[in-house]
Length: 222
Image 1 (tube, one colour):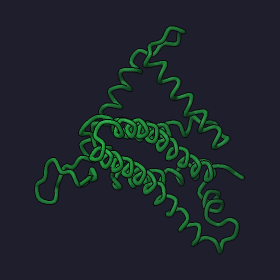
Image 2 (cartoon, rainbow, N blue to C red; image 1 turned 30 degrees about the vertical axis):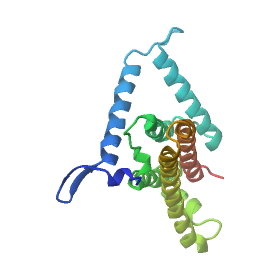
Image 3 (tube, one colour; image 1 turned 60 degrees about the vertical axis):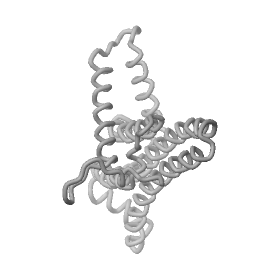
Image 4 (cartoon, rainbow, N blue to C red; image 1 turned 135 degrees about the vertical axis):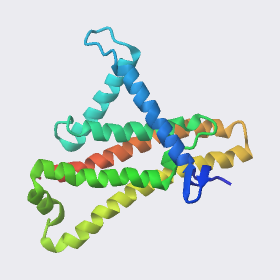
């Protein structure tokens, strides 16, 4: 039986419990903070740079390019948020090759939390760019004020679809590997793990791009 990270309990006392989702989420945050400090503590403007800085520059430039192509705006205001989403989800999924590891993105509570972050980020960026009335009028009252209830429902459905899509794809990949492991313990799991790594990156990319699409819709004037 394949359990979700929320169902794997490491410590419990009363209604308080520490499950795999919490443990591996904090582990990923610690790893990201540590490697960020390690890479950025000796940044160099010269042509001779470390491998870590080279990887960081490629990653940042790649994310900036995608943000600019999607939003047709300068990427700097959105880079910290979108970049954090992408890196966290990508690392969460890529570490799935480690035995015993449970990806936090395989938990609906984690994907819902990420989607809620997007839900609040959209109006924050929109209001900052266009003002409260400009954002509200464009995002909720167009093409006609009669669409207000449907636009509100649409915003909530976007967030639900974000969280469920990521959760479903990660969990389905984990379950398929578990099934194939019981059928053919040597050959198929290796192939599925390789495909899982690619799928994990794709899911991180899709989540970040969709988040940027929602933000761009709230910050553009067209």
